[in-house]
Structures are given as structure tokens and as C-alpha cells.
Figure 1 (cartoon, rainbow, N blue to C red):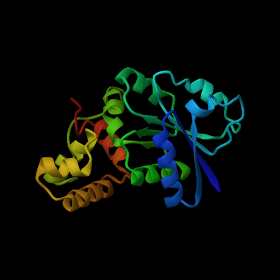
Figure 2 (tube, rainbow, N blue to C red):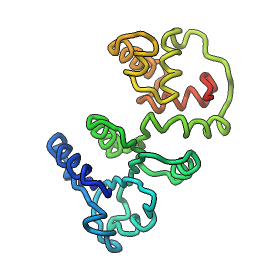
Figure 3 (cartoon, rainbow, N blue to C red):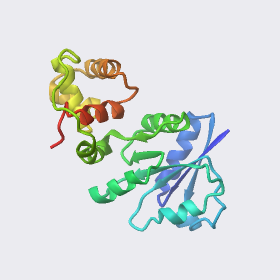
Figure 4 (tube, rainbow, N blue to C red):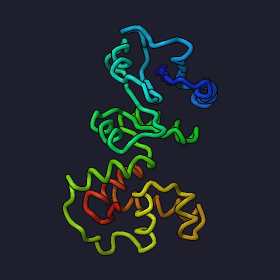
Length: 211
């Protein structure tokens, strides 16, 4: 059974891990509270996926050094961070970049995605990643005629800007059901598996610009 460890300084995370354990019974999910237990000693932390909640004084290198298994997957749980620091963390190539505002269902999807061999990046963090990506990979600035409907382009633009489906629905005066259908259609037409990949593709080809 795969083991997931969430390392943080918050007792709230302990409670979240307990709830996740109940809903993801195929995994062992534990919390490691640094305030209670201190930093783990070198090569003592044994887990398959380590989720690190970032704080002002989080020493990622020291935490990584405490891992017993060099094949441990690592994800960061990010609350508030500067654009410069976030870009630096993206360059380090971790397996996941979580947002502290994620709902439990999103956490479950993210954990599953990482164990399936993918990299998970929460949509709220995408605009920063893509603002850097666009200058390195831009190829054209023409939207392919007939690829998406006018409404789908509007939805995709908001996906690129990190909007949730509920926010998109409010802005475009649509139902959540309709937005969900538009997002599914966009993924199918762009031949991608998730929102992040769709957004990256749109930015790469300059179909949608980031302010």
C-alpha cells in the first residue's frame, strides 16, 4: 500500500489527513507536524509521496535530505508566495504543486494523478507558470479556425487565467453544468487530458495571451 505523508506546522492538516484516509482507503495517509516533532533526522522519513506545506522558513533541501527513499515523490502545498519564488520552485521540477485552497476532492485527484506518473499543477498557480512559458515557447498568435466554438474560447481563456468552473459560470452567465460540458469538449478537441495541459497548449501557441 502506497504511503502519503503531509508535512506541515498546522494541526488542521492533521485533521485533513484523517478525512483523506477515510476517503482514500487504498493509501496510507499520515501527517507529520514539524512543530510537534521537529525536523526529521537525516534519511529517516520513509514515504512514497511527501507533500510539504511551505512556510516562510521551510528548508526544502533539508527535508529532502531526510528522505529514506530516493524515489519518493514530492509535492509542494503553496499558500502565499512571490511570483519570483514560485517560478524558482517550478524550475526545480517537483511532482506536484498544490494550492492551500484545494478542496478534498481536488487533493484526491492530485494524489492519484501523481501516482499515475503525471505532474499535478493546480490551476490557481498556472498563470505564473505560463507567463514565463509563453516567451520561451510561443510559435503563432492565430486561433485555429473552427477548432473551438466562440463560447469555448471564452471558457478556455478563463481556464488559462486560473478560474474555477464556478467562477467561469458566474462571469459568462452560464450554469456550472454547461461550463463542465464546455471544459470536457475543450479537452477533447485539444487532445489533452487535463485543464493545465489545455492552458499550456493555448499559451504555447499564443491562442490566448496572459496580461
